[in-house]
Image (cartoon, rainbow, N blue to C red; front, side):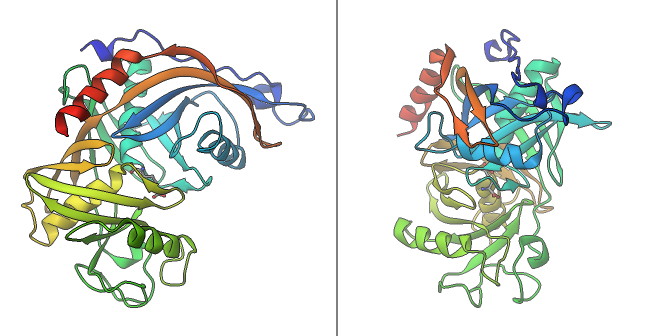
Length: 345
Ligand SMILES: N[C@@H](CCC[C@H](N)C(=O)O)C(=O)O
């Protein structure tokens, strides 16, 4: 497949010696660093993606980089930051994901497709288990969902409905299609951990103002759900689901992969769709194809589009970011995804 060509592997150069593992720790911090990145998206969920396998920033610095690079009013913008990181004995590589508020998520399934694509490019593999923050997922190159669209299939799970996993406190063992006592909503929700926390409700029509109000309420980290949650309103549509998500640490997004996985699993669990059947999951950014199994495993096929390559000067300690220096626009890929979305409309 043309998109799998190993044409261009990003080299990430760090200008300041403090961020070179060899010289770290003894020098006063005098300035910033140059970070090379790929601006990518999965189903409209967009991120700067950095090959961080050889970088040694600490967690606080990565959180600062995420806030600077994913700031919608800043020079890059995105729903968060993706890092391709080293694997271990059983994973060829790994992924870390920071939300735009700097918090680190357990997973990001739209981001996983993009990160896996880069991981495949730098390792030459075409499938691999990928190490996530607290779990593992499978990823593989897949047949293009539309001409010219780089496509990755992922398998993640098992999804869990245990409140202890979802982070719901004081409401019993599980919430499946039920009112959640203490949540300011009369709707019936299903709590799902993918393993990041999701609250999913099926609605006749998405009311964005209501979704945002509820998402904002969860963002405050109330006693009911102190680690917060991603909240999704889901419509059953001919041929599939339409998912609208307020993401933890981000806000309203064009799409959220783990929310689409959680919604597909919740739809199967509540008999709205059949386990084992492939479902089209539509969102504001396009669509993915998802299959949930009764054992909680969820497979998703979708785009991993690289829009451009660039670099930026950043000083995470001072909280400053410079202008984006464009290296290469990947216009054909962006156009192929645009055409795919238009064909759906
Ligand atoms: N966009 C992601 C999910 C990102 C993490 C989420 N906001 C969280 O904090 O759990 C996806 O595609 O799954």
